[in-house]
Length: 96
Image (cartoon, rainbow, N blue to C red):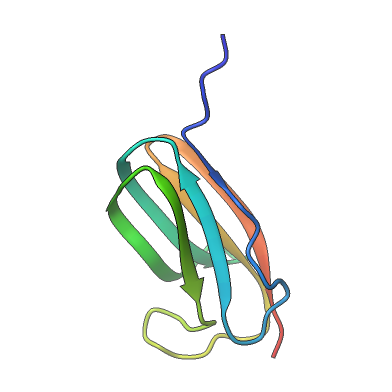
């Protein structure tokens, strides 16, 4: 049979964005998650949350800055949510 999906990720809004975008996601169970932003070369730009998270619906904001607080360039980025062996990702468009 099909394994139930551990989590789902909504699309960020607004998208495209130029200041802050919200990334919603829902976990069907507690677990260690990693929600990070990557550029299109696969480099991690920013860790939004890493570690234990409870089941339920969550929202995290990304303000278009990297891990050191610098503004990143306009363009396409990928939000990647990992829980156990499951990975979800979708593209974010940053316009400045």
